[in-house]
Length: 171
Image (cartoon, helix red, strand yellow):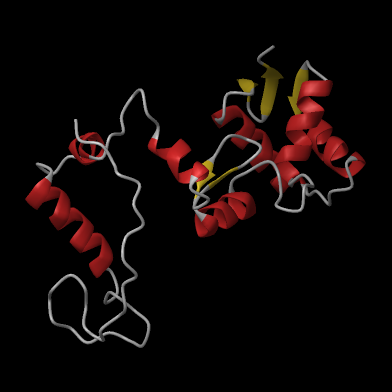
């Protein structure tokens, strides 16, 4: 297993041509034509690492005993959400906007508010109870939204389905 030296790579300057080597002109400040960054990433894996992310990680000293995500966080290039999700700045914004129970401002999303209510009030849950819990949490809630959030909590393993639009806590 090779080790990563941790040395700062040289600063790259966009040249106006796609960095994947295709020769396509790119916009000011861009390294790649649209989608070519992923193409180049896949080609590099194929050319140098047997098309294996595991080989790439091992080559740079990462693996089961040395987390690449922890290294990215320690380097200040990634962050960790309160829910445990790890990612770069744009991924974190997307996660907190669309997927996480916690909002970036520290408040709770509809899903987060319902999850809190479910944990505080175990037992049977239906649409009416979910609407009431969301409204008590200060979240505007239609029956449709409440059903969607109950379904999501079921998919995430917080609730078990007991009937049509009826759930029970897993605790």
